[in-house]
Amino acid sequence: MKSPSIHVQNLRKVYTVSQQEAGTAAALGSLVHRHKIEIAAVDGISFDLAAGEMVGFLGPNGAGKTTTLKMLSGVLHPTTGEATVLGYIPWKREKPFLRQITLVMGQRNQLVWDIPALHSFELNRAIYRIPPDDYRYMLDQLTELLGLGPLLHKPVRNLSLGERMKCEIAAALLHRPSVVFLDEPTIGLDVTMQRRIRAFLTEYNQRFGATVLLTSHYMADVEALAKRIVVIHHGKLLFDGDLSVLVQKFTAHKTIEVQIGDCQADLNQYGEVLSCADGHFTLRVPKAETARVTERLLADLPVIDLTVEDPPIEEVIEMVFAQESP
Image 1 (cartoon, rainbow, N blue to C red):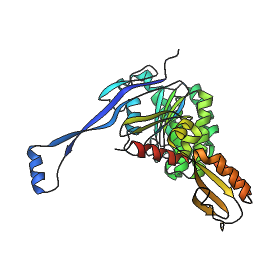
Image 2 (tube, one colour; image 1 turned 180 degrees about the vertical axis):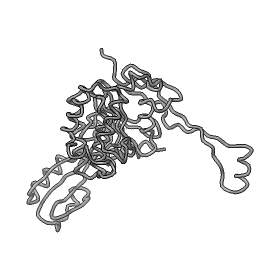
Image 3 (cartoon, helix red, strand yellow; image 1 turned 90 degrees about the vertical axis):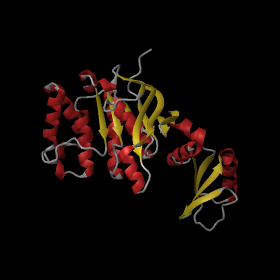
Image 4 (cartoon, helix red, strand yellow; image 1 turned 120 degrees about the vertical axis):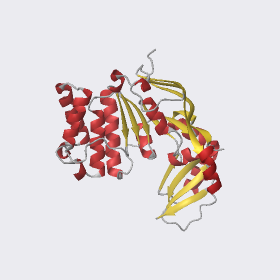
């Protein structure tokens, strides 16, 4: 059996912070004695990723996602626990390890602002000591996949947010990493650019067999890129498995979209009416009642179109957090 590309066992990161009450007396007292508390940003999580696997890493703000990625990429040391990436201990930051991984953060820039993106690519080639032939090959591949041709010779400051993000991703992948950590790679991008980035990441994974761990607040990213998801909350692991299993486990309802021509009809007898626009009703019904309600709708009404779906993944994730919140 092959060793996992990423192995995490009881990983924990605790920060010690000072806590101060409001008021002048409390402020003066803190000069003599500081009251400190420990906060577990990541609290004993465990999971494995196989080589070439793409996994969504989900959780609300403050759940510990970025802290985990920083530990796995060697930026942070854990308080306790174990982790290996490609067989290396990340926080030792050995050169062979660093040459095989990358961390892309949607709100962080690595390109030099006042020079063309191509010049920053050349700088990365020197830093990673990429052989010239390998560099030209990867630059050609990334230029094709991301449509970078018109952008390479423009100063970075003249690029739009979406164009800059494409160049940022290319710069991070020039050394052809085997493991890619993505922290909100499509944040702030318009819908069209989000789709392009997703299509590129799928193609990169398939073409080069890279292992990808992705965080995103856009559920469309996760649905498009990852069959498996890992969900954490308050630093603890809540769920690790197939996205469809999560939907089945945490939802007791189905959504029925039915078109009958106008919104004058009263459909409350069939289920909870969530909305209606131009004759398109959205109903929420108990999962066990879906077949019976669908049959009644078709028998009772002049149905033009009808579809049955699981609830949006955003709702599912909210249900997970709601059930697990203290």
